[in-house]
Length: 305
Image (cartoon, rainbow, N blue to C red; front, side):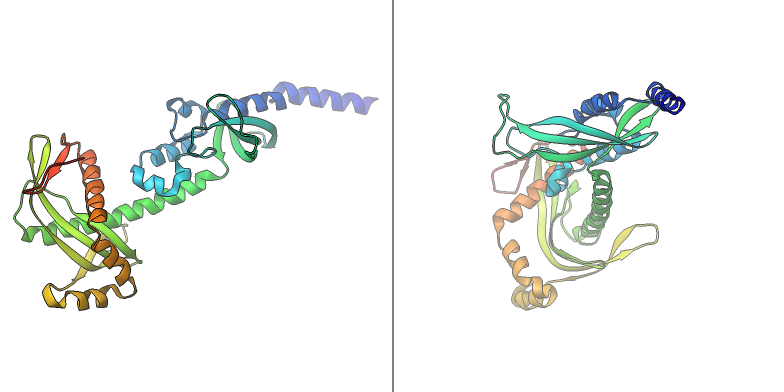
C-alpha cells in the first residue's frame, strides 16, 4: 500500500510540475498552424525557437527562382493545387524535460472543406522545445538541417556568380561603349570546384524615365578558372573565350568538350537567352531598387520587366 501511494504521489507531482500529454498535444496542434506553406507567417516568430525562425526567414528571403529549384523550401506539408493541410496530432513523446516530438497526421483538405478520398494520410514529426516556459517549434521533419545546407550552397553559388559578374563588368565591359549601368546576363553550362563554363553577355544601359535603354552589348562564351581565398572570397583568375569568325566552332568544341552540345543548344536558342536576360535584369532592378519597368534595345520595341 505504501508503494502504491508513493507512485500516485510521484505521478501527481509530475502532472503539477510539468505538462500533461493533453496540454502538449494541444500546443502541438497550435504550432502546426505555423508550419510554412508557401509563406512564413509573420506571427510564426512567436511560435518558433529563434534559430529555427532565423533559418526559415533567411530561406524565404532568398531569390524566388533559387528557392523554387527546391520547392520544399516553400512548403513542408502541402503542394500546389489549392489544398489546405489538415493536421491531427496523434501523440507527443517527451525526450527530456525541455524537448518533445509530436507525431502529426496530415490530410489535404480542399477549399470547399471536402477531402479527397484517394489522398493518403501523411505522417510528420514536429519538434518542440520549451523556452522561457513556452513550448515552441524547433524543427519539422528535420528540415532545419536541409535549409541550412541549402542556404550554405546558395551563398556559395551567389559568391561565384558575383565573382563572374564582377569580372565581366570590370574586365570585359570596360571595352564597350559605356552607359550608366552594366548588367551581364549569365547562363552557366557546367560548374566544378575551380572551373565554370558558360554563355555570357555584356549589356550597358542608360536610364530614360522608366526604361533601361541599351547602349552596347555583346557575347562572350568560354571557361573561367576560379580561385577561392581563405576568407571565403571568390574571384576569376583566368578566362578562356571562344574565338570569333571562322575559328569559333573549333574553339567552342575544344573549350566546352563534353558540354558542347548543351552549350550550343542554349546559345542558339534566342527565346531562352532573352528569358535569362530578363530574369537577371529583373533581379538586378529589384536588388538595387530602381524605378524602371522596361528595357529596350535600339530599334526594337520596349520589353516589360
